[in-house]
Amino acid sequence: QVQLVESGGGLVQAGGSLRLSCAASGRLFSVYTMAWFRRAPAKEREFVAGITLTGGAPAYADSVKGRITISRDNAKNAVYLQMNNLEPEDTAVYYCAARVGGGVGTESSGYEYWGQGTQVTVSS
Image (cartoon, rainbow, N blue to C red; front, side, top):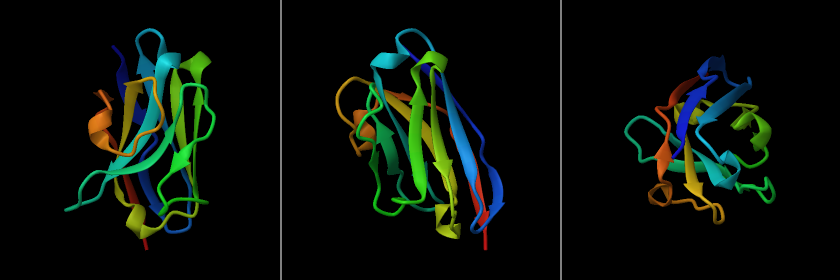
């Protein structure tokens, strides 16, 4: 099992940047495929980015490509989401998710473990 705790959210102006972190506790973090999802007000939870256990071939939602980068540090049991050039449409609660092995999936049902989320608010 793994427990996930997100941090780094906050209020930022459009065009600004934030770096979200997800700290994982538990053993064998390196076996987990990790992802970030978000849920905007009155919207369904959606996939943002994901990364496999080796860190290769990350995947991104089309809406964030070129602005957001996912990375992981298995030695620190952490995954990160660097968000640049933020837009008001990026306002949401961002969730870290994990599943054992496999490729990056874009459906939330494919992930077994979830954090509590961190709020990101982008003002115009």
